Length: 271
Ligand SMILES: [Fe+2]
Ligand SMILES: [Fe+2]
Image (cartoon, protein in one colour):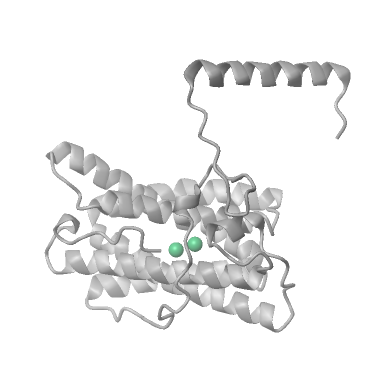
């Protein structure tokens, strides 16, 4: 949109002000370049955080409930699926984008609570704070990717506000009360996410969803080929979800054995 002269002046002033602030504090991130010599565009992740998704991970692995708590976790997740299916039906792009706004919450809440616990108890976390925050960041990258191919409507944005308000607090309380249950719920949520992304893939394969070119951010994040498509992106995201499934069931199993997370090495960089 062309700017009016007055807006242009304001914009110039804003740019000058920003340049002055950057030079005053000297914290501008160093310029980074890609292998092809072009500038790295993303500040939300840097080249050393990019990786190749392990798409060969077992997508079928399932945790068979051990006890009543596991059965409850599985039931809770299955029952959440009913309204989600009714709301989105076959709109998988939109569904993925909306569900990633929820999926990025548990890792951050778990990481926050473990962080506070480490401070309170003067003890190490065994890498679990970092592992859970990494998971949250990875989920947010899924959101940043799907935002490029789907535009939320006003009522979907409103729904996200409500769902985040409820889910953040519910998960916070659940994690305080029983991290074993909280991680088990996320493990089962990830199993459902794998299922949803498998359906998303078959919709693409059957031509009901257009296999558009992959967003640039996804190509850089998963180190995909320059001509990668949405299908490659969904493959990579589904592989990430399978890793989250394993991390969360593993965390819950540690508690099931009567231990604390810090007693077992955290799966850092595992996504
Ligand atoms: Fe995700
Ligand atoms: Fe996930």
